[in-house]
Amino acid sequence: MKCLILTVTIGNGHNAVANAMAEELSSRGHEVKVIDLYKNHKFISYVISDLGFAMGFRFPNLANNIFMQAKKQGKTPFTRFNKSIKKELLAQINEFEPDIIVSSHVAGRLFVREYCHLFKKPVKSVFFVTDFDVPPSLNKTFKDDYVIIPSPVFREELLSNGFKDDHIKTCGIPLNKSFYEPILRKDARKRLEFSLDSKKLTILMLGGMKGVGNLFNTLKRISSEPNFQIIFLSSKNTKLKAKVEKFIKKRKPAATIISEGFVKSISDVMACSDLMIGKAGCLTCTEAIERGVPMFLYSNVCYPERQNTEFLVSKKCAIALHPRDNYIEVIKNANLTEMEKNLTKLKMANPAVTAADFIESIGGVAKKEPSTDAPITSTDISDSNDPSAPATSPKSEPNEQSAPESKANSLEPSAPEKSNLSEPSATEQTNNLNEQSKPATDENNNQPETAKQEAVNTSISQSEVA
Image (tube, rainbow, N blue to C red):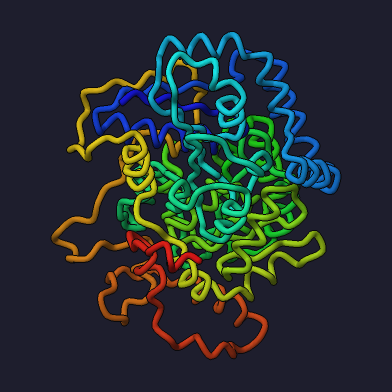
């Protein structure tokens, strides 16, 4: 089977999904090609990436109004952008002659819908919804149109839009294989060579290539807490990294701050972390779900991140951060153990495998044993973030214990089937912070914690996600 995967570089999420699916489909012996639609069109890339990010962060209400109008009318600017790449992309499609076109961004699906009549051979279209909401342009369907969604919560909306029941598949967001492999917290720290204090609460802050709104201001607001240790990742945003390092040198904050740019394994970093602060990009949130990391997400953002935040808050595995909140108190008062337990309800079996099975069934391909013979042609795709890198996370050694041990199996040594590591749990750490100002009164303080152990490598059926 020939499979063409269309992606768009807006952040790293869409590319990571494209690469995860390319790897899985290629391992099954299929011929796969990945194309970044606007990579060679600098003006379009600037408009949808730089200007889009700037408007979303600086004027979220305006961006939300534009998004909602687009969703209501079923129109997006990508229809116009696709006209400018029509000749170029049609030539690539007709040269490759795919059986199935998979789109990790709505622009790819729109191109297929508008120009499939110009393809040399009929193709079937599979679209990945990469947020917890129905995006614009899914207000109607067309022949041989299939959709893969991360949650069944909006399945009914798709059915009302004309999609057939067997054309909709719920399987989550495909991630790099490293997120589905168990890893010990101590091993993750060794791999990353971070000097972390096991008695402090480890907070992961994700900046990304474009920065994230007030992430730097958030760092300043929580840096006065000496019992916090913060891993601040700026990705390829060198200006943000320099700004953080200047702040550390000049202000000498009470909190321990580890400033890094692009890290090779975000999976390992999450395995080290007790909680995450950032915006609700669906890929990042899915990574946090798989690693069992409670999320503190900005509320003052535009769609679809706002919808993602609302969804995760409704599932009680995330907390929305409002501009006037006392962030230190919000973190200290959070029931991280309960949030970790709720995260396990959103976990699914490896979505890339489930999605590949679905794609093969659409193409009428019999299930095959994995193979590495077929090449992936991906010269047209931009460099993506770590989740698209080869999986290298180590597995638990058999002489340590029979069950896979996660980063937080060390949280309660007295509980059964736990590691004998001495690191305190995230909740114990927050309770210790609160004890400095008042006695602990949380009735859950004495209850054994099992959420993190359950969170790693626990596959949940689709019915449990609803």
